Image (tube, rainbow over the protein chains, first blue to last red):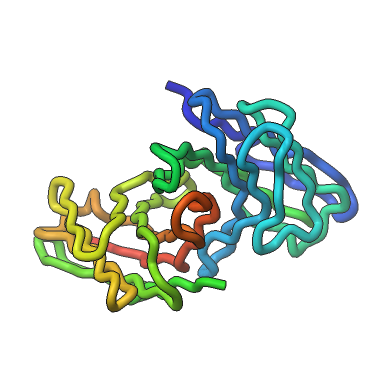
Length: 116
Length: 114
């Protein structure tokens, strides 16, 4: 069972470089999310998507872009990497059990990004 | 925006001891999730609470939701080294159909000494 798969696991970027963090889920989940986790700061929502073709900003979207062309994939793009984007990035997905019901989010293993 | 405050921030216990971690919300709770994270790994779902007064248990971990207090607690009985890790609480930002935006607390780091 693959679940939520993130690639790469680690990456070092130079300031100003760009990269795409990949996220794929094989559970046919409607909802997908990108979070960043900084030491002592918990998880901050960057972007989320409620279905293919629909994305919206979370709490800390500046410096990032996303797209959702398929249900399975939700890549996160960093255009001009900055040291402040050094963090651990988590992708997650979830599904509504029923209209209005909550559902657990399944997380990937994370991507540890360092910008130097 | 909703904020979740976890206490304590860190906890060191001797193996076999009981412990409690709290999660308090700044706004009405429409559900509460507990996750566990080991260093360098993703989040593992523990439990989801949806109704006030709800209590769930899994092995030696029990979680309760007090809607009136806007608070949830996670209790571990007879702790083991395998319980060590970071415990995070998360809550949906809205009720009803828009439950997709999850806010998380900063986490509680649990160390269990053998």
